[in-house]
Amino acid sequence: MILTKEQQAILDGEKGETLAKVMKTLVMYGDAFEAEKLVPITSKYNHLVTSFGLKVMSPVYDLMQKLLDAGVSSEQKFSVDPRPLDKNVPANFLQNLVFNKFMYTKQDFYEKQLEKLGLMDKNAFSCTCYMDEMGNKPQKGDILSWAESSAVVYANSVLGARCNRNSGIIDIMGSIVGYVPYFGLLTDEGRKATWVVKVETTKKPEAQLLGSAIGMKVMEDVPYVIGLDKWIGNELTDSATSYLKDFGAATASNGAVGLYHIAGLTPEAVELGESLIADGAKEYIIDDAELERVQKNYPVIWKNPDATPKLCFVGCPHLSLAQLTDWTEKIEAELKKNGKKKVTIPTVFTAAPGVLEAFEKTEYAARLKETGVITSYICPLMYMNNPLCKKMPVITSSNKLRTYTSARYYTDGEILQTITGGKK
Image (cartoon, rainbow, N blue to C red; front, side):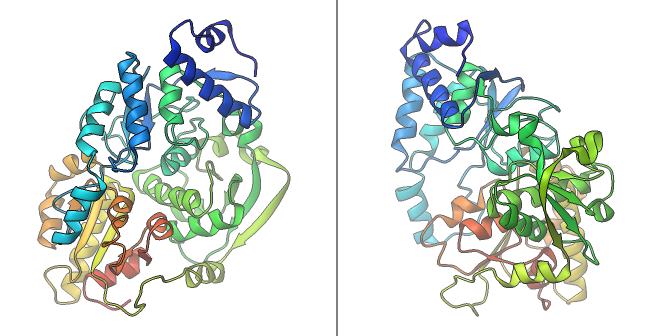
């Protein structure tokens, strides 16, 4: 790797032993991917994936403390992934005991470390930091040092920023020195599509299901999706971006996609068109039967596959303001149709603190509360990490949550019917 004089000076220890170690880590990381150089981070803010104070993560806290003791802080202010705990989310005595005494015992301590390192503010906890209400929205062409997979794929694809799927801790190290290795999705060549995906469904495909199918097929490659704009339009409206948020999260978790292009819709596809497709690209056709096949092959890992659901999570990644409003109207209508006043299964909708604050200012907040739905800022995955929680029959419309936990996947329509006392 070729370093500039300034970068070499940091590596040589001219700015202290701690910064030298940080630079050495980034150089070794870049060498592993045959990066030719380091390039400056150009985004205003960073985003960190590690937001939870798990007791077993002592090496992380030790590392953060060494940075703080050396007087090192991030060159950028940053947001982080969601908090793991919220007293408003249903949990029994034993589950809460495990959460507070055996799992997230370092949460307060870790959050104080984050504040000293450069946390944007005390409410900057969400996997959807790029939403307008959260204030960390990169510009097209910005170079990032992010690690959260659903945020990386959104920033690359919908916003046109440039970021690799970095690991946790690498994200903060990039911010500290202000550079990241130049390879992969930072390069023009690395952003070319090696798959052409043709959507030939007879109705609007479920975002989480379509993303899952593509992720499992293309894995870490870049897909160029043709035919989806027919269903979600040619403008990045609130509805379209909400759809792409969920679609991208599924491609990233069910596979390892860090960038996708949607013909006629995402910035680079609009600007460059099919010139983004690499020579020899493979083809994948998705029709109704293919989506049905994918969903039917999801494993059910509940101890009793026929168990009655005890909890429902919607919002992984966090819901947008438009989605909260849309869900409110649909739940009200279905409850009325089914002769019910409140949801029949404890249901939690998760969203970013800033989104929830904006939602509370609308008439829909009180209306949603009347249906019995709970809103929260937590990460459902962190909740499901509790061994007593993962034994519960939990349902979700998130393919990310399905992939990483024991939660069982249903489409949005199926979830709506289930929680309102209807039939799937």
